[in-house]
Image (cartoon, rainbow, N blue to C red; front, side):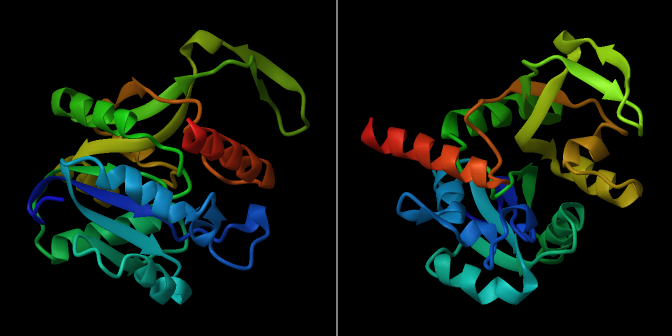
Length: 231
């Protein structure tokens, strides 16, 4: 890792309640194939030299457990997260500014996307240098319908224009800070905030870069990791 003044600072939202998994512990602390979900995610981020500082937002009641996982990492900081992902990223940005860190870009990657590979991280970083704001995404495969509250189809959407958004998402630092400060809308990802004030470029992602959200996702993640370890 580089010094704290680096090209990229990574923010890793990891403070979610994991309700859909029905867990008694935070999802990032769940073990998959010998490491926790958080450790798999951090390993991919650490492998990219451009990333100098990593800020992880943890559930406030589990900060100590998260800190024990990264106790020997000077470039990794654990802070309490917020009630939503959006609030957690905002708190990480606030900590970044309070510490007077300097990075040209901020990369945001969900802890639950523990199957991320370094090639995709590098591709988004390469693209942000040209476009200022990028997100990983994959083209939709299924046909997509818009429905009304009663469950009736309103219209069919043009599949060729639809992409499923992933992380990492990477932005010029001041652009992301401005987006969080100026936009009051609720958003499930940072690109939704940034696109209001600046175009966001899509970088083709990876279909294995799933977000572990449901019990089925856990099974699939174990299968993918096991296959990689045996390769």
